[in-house]
Image (tube, rainbow, N blue to C red; front, side, top):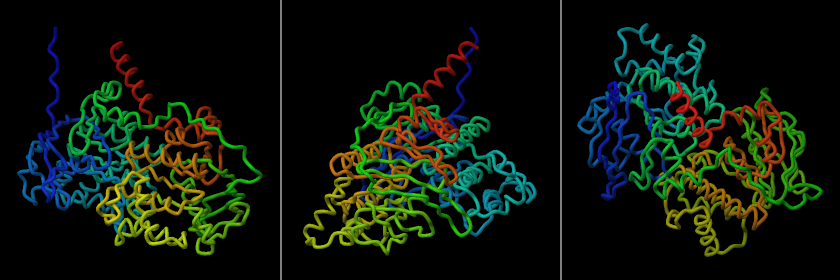
Length: 547
């Protein structure tokens, strides 16, 4: 028998990492893992599990009030914990790079794309000349599938789409050719087609360049698509670790089983729910809606009805007009034409011209939990403001109880009412935004990508809550999302938008099980699936064994 090839030496070695906060409480406890060149480790868990803290530790970052109190981190042969501040700054970009969830947070709106990527090279001292650095910038853009032209290099962030911005963020991370890449939820806000491109890009770059990737996410389907191994965290501790195929098919720990059970899959059967026969007119009727920004028309002749107790999902890629439609209906985008009726009455285009009853009954939940809440108001005050605005005549005690009840309904402790938003995670902030809408006891919720920031368990809790409100109170929902797996498990009907036009609509099971439009078929094809990814892995193993 021939000798077995030795496994490549790990480029990331984390041993018994412990991170504490000022009170002495451990937010990460004894976490250990390694990553080899060309390997992607998926790091998963609920919000607050400590996964982002672990990812940032590879770059020598400690969040405010936290410190690495024990263990070791070796990245590319460098002992990270032994470095001073200057040493840690030198580590970033050269030995380990970071791709954030929102690329806008790491891009300067006043600098061109070419200058920003080039600045990374100057900071880490890459290249002997400006010309050499410019060539490296162009190579990085080519690697991520973006134009290398002078025209593109001169563009500013606001001139790029969300998918292009994320690829620029990845280009900035890989331009210095670091051996380690930390990716923190980089596809959370992307539509399924763009997400698929980014996932394939990351997988290819790690394989071709021998990059050790740590992929931090709450999306288990993404992990099934991209990762070689997965580490599950809960409350700062390692729950389970192993190869993706084995861990997803045969999870040992109850917590891992809960995560997998809560994750919707596009391959699962659709939700089937009996609805009352529709009346003469739905609670919300839209006819011939057209909208745009200045001379750029975004929506074209959009028409649909929303029935009492129904969930209508609106899906499509970025730029399809989903959010413009939502904002037009809620009165935040008055530059539209067409007819919008609420219970048979014409709905004023501007929110400030609508009656108190209309405002109360038609509520909107924003996509971003980071901009939806007043940073200077406590959580309780934000919810209380919505209650006061729409519910007259209640006593102080009744208002106080309504606020606390709303927090409990979305799975938050009552004590959260005293906190400011910066004390909460993104998922917790989104639950507050949902609680603020629910405290008004609305008839219709317009939900604009409200689950994109939530882990699968919290997402399942929110969806179950909304489902209960549908059944018990007849709540209707316009559910805007790019998560087709969630749509299939939750929505009654689906409306597909492409470039501002309705290309397909109907019962969810019928549309997603047998799509008729080529665009809908493309969305389905690019949606990640745990079960289908595992089947593909199994076929790959079988093909390799036959070879």
